Length: 97
Image (cartoon, rainbow, N blue to C red; front, top):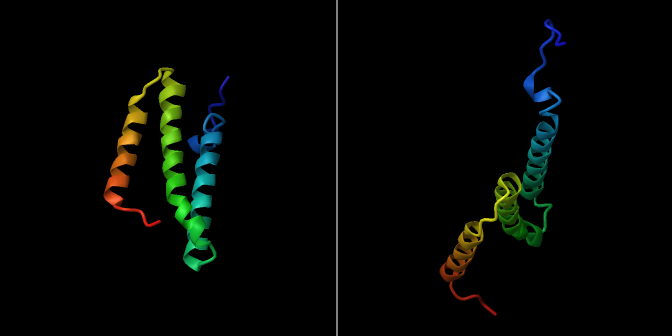
């Protein structure tokens, strides 16, 4: 039976607790990285690696949603990533050796 008098906020409900914790951890990590980056405590190598790592994280989450949730294999996402990588290389010009 449900208790009629007590209603919990939906973010603290048992079904949403893990999602809320994940979002909170991502936001806290972002804030910490921004504070470290703005104060100059991050090396230039780590700062330059943040952009590609973030792109790969977004691609992995999209692939997980596509294959994991729907259960079908879709190679269109890999095609779009390869076209984007090829375009980025073409637009960046010659890489100095």
